[in-house]
Each structure stands twice: as structure tokens, then as C-alpha cells.
Length: 88
Image 1 (cartoon, rainbow, N blue to C red):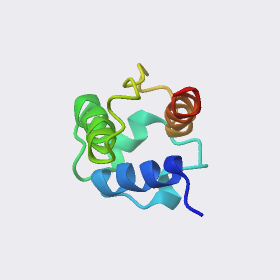
Image 2 (image 1 turned 45 degrees about the horizontal axis):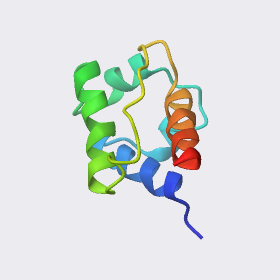
Image 3 (image 1 turned 90 degrees about the vertical axis):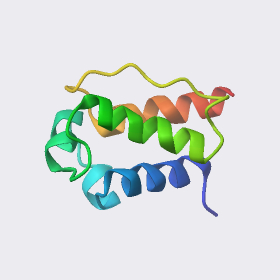
Image 4 (image 1 turned 120 degrees about the vertical axis):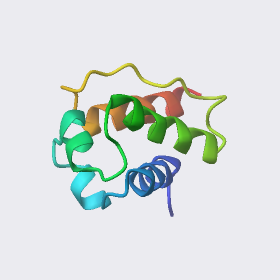
């Protein structure tokens, strides 16, 4: 069974044009995502990918875009989204 957070992670990875295996569970900093993604050239592009995934999955009414620095990891970001999903 695919959970909401798994689908969300997949959509974010697709929007960033990076494999899920590179993004999740590797303590990859958001700054490193910007460096590795062929489509995210700055933090705004990164957060647009996250916001776009929220809209695509119709989660934007249930979630707030997490405020993170580029020193945070992708896992920090996804943990925050998962916590919001659980609370919604």
C-alpha cells in the first residue's frame, strides 16, 4: 500500500528530476539538492517543486509550506510534511 507521504516524495523527486534514492534517507542538505537538480537553480525553485507537488496532489489546503534553510536536509523537510499530514 502506498502512503500519502510516499506519493508526495515521488512527485517532489519527479519535479526536481532526481532519483528518489538520491533524495531520501541520505541526509542530503537542501543546498545539495539545488546543486544536483537540473531544474532547481535556487531555493525558490526547490520550494516551488514542493509547493507544486502539494498542489498536484491536492494537499495544498491541508499543508503549509515548511520554512527551512538550505542547511536542513530533505529528510527534515519530508518529516515536517509527514507530521502535517498526520495532524490534518
